[in-house]
Image (cartoon, rainbow, N blue to C red; front, side, top):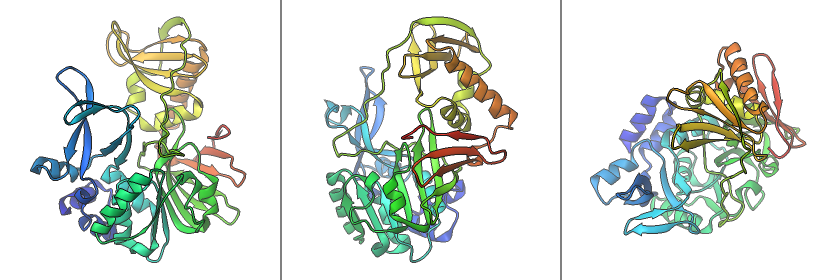
Length: 383
């Protein structure tokens, strides 16, 4: 436990003594008795291999590394491959400790603050909050009753009994309490109204907002008019999407594809996109409703592809003689928008994500703003 805390301090994720003490004194292995690690088996199939938290010294050491641990698979798609491996879709995880620490530091809690956590998961983050604030001030909600029950047992074993509830976290805490701090450990397309209604003037809210191609963590302050204004943080999120029911899972988008139109030179490459997180965030603003996927072609190899539900697509290879070209089908403006975003980002000095503000107004509308010059992107309704 101390080794993990030391690693997080060295990485800059932990910045204050109270959180250093919380991480040093909270046993992660007690909250992750088993987890799944993705690997390729001897038949070339990608599988989730089950590990037990204390089964071996290696497994125990893995729990205390700075890594995300998948703890649950979609029961509708999971299929057993052998005694300890399944195929399927991951649906819950124990968050990357450095990400967790960064979010808790950004939350800016003080003694006496009442906190709501959206997404109980294993209960580990709830335990850290209990260690910092005391169990009476910690509330947590999760859509999966089984996870809540399991987390409750883990927390009790660690000596904590915070207020836990099962329900749709996007609707806030079931009792309708108000909170000084709200932290979301699942991604949402927009800040839910219920979170604002369960805030008070001055409440700080830290959550992962998914904008399509990319998203990020925002730190917002709620005011007297129930507006939430702030900015993207220096930490990237990428949490699993919030679910409204325990057994609903987001199906991957598979749009029909328009016929190939042409291949041409491009000013932005796959590696430009893959290697620059702030630029991907900007792409999401320029291309609302689009998604970014990896595309594998037997002849051209691996490429990055941007696609939309209308069937338009554009892809550029990661390596090979065609690097620096784009092939597209459907609306030619799709990739032109990507090139325009690349020019803007470079002209502005390649701003990091924390140079972008995020605002949710009282009427539910939202926008992102480049703080230095005020360039603004209104987000689509419902995003």
